[in-house]
Image (cartoon, rainbow, N blue to C red):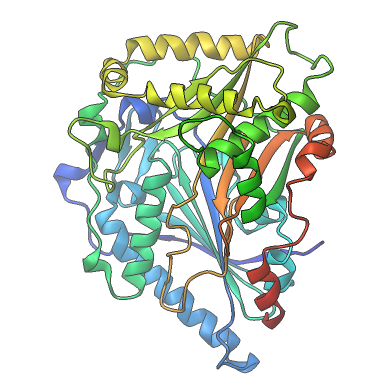
Amino acid sequence: MKFQVEVLSTKTIKPSSPTPDHLRHHKLSYLDQIQPPIFMPMVLFYPKENDHNDLDLISIHEQRCSKIKKALSDTLVKFYPLAGRVHGTQYVDCNDEGAYYVEAKTDCRLSDIIENPNPKDFNEFLPCELDAAHELPVCFQVTLFSCGGMSIAMGMSHKIGDALSYFTFLNGLAAEARGEGNDICPPEFVSDKYFPQKDLSGFYQHRSGIIKQNISTKRFVFDGPMVQAIRAKCVDMPRRPTRVEALSAFIWSRYIASCTNIQQEGVTKDAMYTVSHAVNLRTRMEPPLPEHTFGNVTRTAIAVPPVPVDPKNGTLHGVVNHVREAIKQVDKEYIRKLQEGDAHLSFLKSRTEEVKRGEVVSFSFTSLCRFPIYDADFGWGKPVYVGSASFTFKNLVSFFDTTVGDGVEAWINLLEEDMVKFDADEELLKYVSLAPCSKNAKVSRNY
């Protein structure tokens, strides 16, 4: 559908109290340094409160925005690097310059967006382009819908932290707005202690897969019974695959089957096809780090399953086994070598060049299943729907829990020509739900 978003105001929200002098210089860790300068985006949708009439909408919206701005100002005191400015790959100047904040309105209803979510629509509710995260650590946009509902969009620079850091901040902000900020564990900005900064001079920053045009992003919903059916394909395994293991193996195998049967442009004939999964290192370190350790404490486990793969002949479990083995190798010894840094940096250099030459085709998965993405209650209830956006990455899949049941939403970014073939794959479509999430379809008629 076509709709317009009009920006009403922009401002910079500063911390409510200044950052102490001894905290003014936040050194980026080695894992922060090698992250691409992009915003990680989420858009949260909240309905109009039922006990308010249309005459109250502007007043209620202004009250909500005031509460968000006050909470943001207070939360930035604890998360002080997010109020500063990033200087290249070296450090954050914690100068209290503030977070970029936008208020906007749109001529569409909330139900127009969430009954049948289109990832590209979600980019319209973001305050910045995703690849514009250069100096700015965090940005917000609050958008009022014509029905009285609202969205809160947040982008956080990947140079600052990973997905767990993102939700630590977002849910800390929501708790502050509810008046429960003192109940939140303060973040620990200590990642440089465990992954010391490296000299990256001469290193082509790891940007494999980032392109500006020709990307198609689509949302594929696998409801609970279909997820179970895909898991059942993995026969003869000592341990049943998780939802994410089974779905990632299935999606990658359908990509291989539908998109690589004809020679791809820019890909060598004997190219290696890899499957990457983001892995949280906090729980794998010795001793383990607390969840509120802020920064990029995540790396990717890279599997190289054989191609072609034919899940109809019962070989899907082979992909799962390769993925499991790759994740298993992210152990204490792996982390020790990662902390040294040089070998991993050398690997990134060579892998980036292999991808550029078409010798390696990487396919990346990141799962936010079981993450607290629906916990952000700012004082008017939890969001009825949460989504991401269309990325400037190719071959990237993000997993989210559905709002009801045990299903999974897969937001898939492919080259446009690959998406045409992938979206027509009959084996894939057998398992994709054509209906919107039942909770959204039921309640969205009220807004």
